[in-house]
Image (cartoon, rainbow, N blue to C red; front, side, top):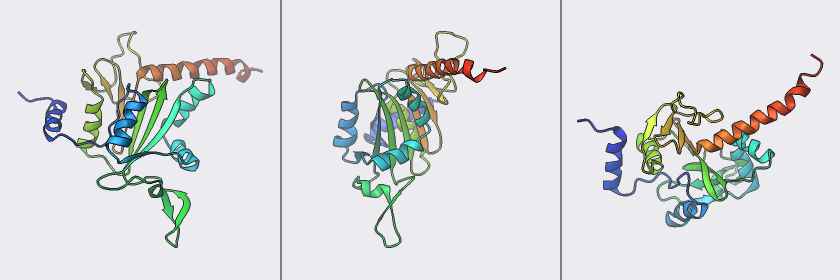
Length: 223
């Protein structure tokens, strides 16, 4: 019998031990995530420079949606992490381009070597994680991130079933995978992976709808 691809890869990872593109998981606390990413691996850092943070956040595919939460008074923390590959040392210097004389310029590197990880925390719990790679991800890397977020469930390719009103349908973020227990949805692209709690999508969609309804009478005035 042919084993499912994710099951086979999980077995390989368990045998090899530490194929680890990034060590983050939706639903865990900020302290646990940072304990692994920043201290255990020694390859990660928090992006704290305001200019860098604004640059990477504004180019993220989740930025506008998170602004909806913030504009409606929902308190979330938007944290960006940078993780280097191999034996490199994480440093903010790697996030700036050099000028013509080889000195640090004021222009950020749009796709720095390694990974950028955008995490949205609600009450110090990760509810969204957006992984961005400087180059196309290998199958082992993309599957590895999904496996670290599989929990006691399994991933199903496609969108969640639409014939059950109790199942949250994503309206804000794209979906190409969902966990069978419906706790996490994901969207996998060649150089990025988005994972999120569907309740976050539901809340943003509700806020967007309420805002549109509030503004509708004014926009229709005069018809």
